Image (tube, rainbow, N blue to C red; front, top):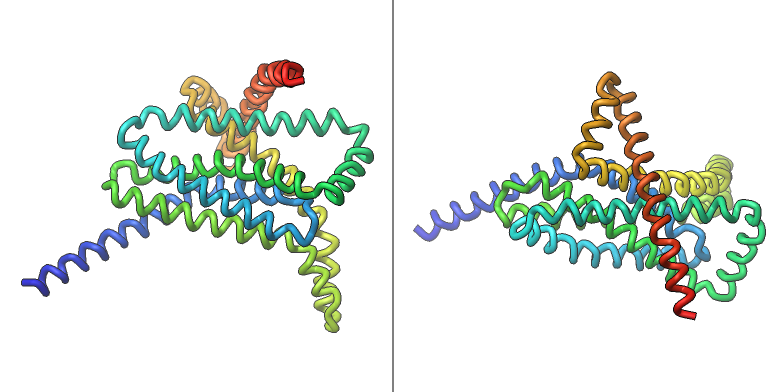
Length: 301
């Protein structure tokens, strides 16, 4: 009897693990787009620090990301059980924050466009004299951005397992949280150390290795600039998508606009409309918050 009960228990465990594996794969495929945005944003956020501090900064942000998910996974499970209607509004607040942050970056960039050399010089001085302050600011900014993107990943995953048992929900959400965090920050660490890899290869005796090293050194700055652009665009794409999907009339209107398109064209057009809506919302939030922040700053003085 005891042997039979043990075999039944093991069979049940194997069945649960098999179901969890299938659902985790499904959730991973659905969150792949957000994963790409998460990668671009975080690589862009942690770039620019002193070379020997790049990996410690990535590790600090990764630890912050794990903490984010330690908060988000239990919170998502609790909200789904006791207040399922609150998940979407909270996610939309995160989407609005992403769009606001993206618009703020654009405004700052264009406002200081003519002072680019001066700003870069100040940045170099701050990194040499007070690099720790700048480093802390980068880490905090990256962890804040990670929180919003992690929330979307968790909510998308929750949608895949919403009708499953609590145990399966917890296992799938925990699995996705670990896999996504390790995957993203492993890749981020690799990206920010590309220049070191190029330098190492360029000093090898092999001419082919030297050629690859020089190519990496040439391409690395362009890649980081590209990630900066992609990272800002991702804020609008992800934030806009969250907001559009949460506002039924806007979502249906955009679907109607792109309904005559097909395949890739439809996806690109939908992404463009989501991004434009995100920019518009971000601009409105900035217009509301900016005067309030200036007023608060005056009162503080």
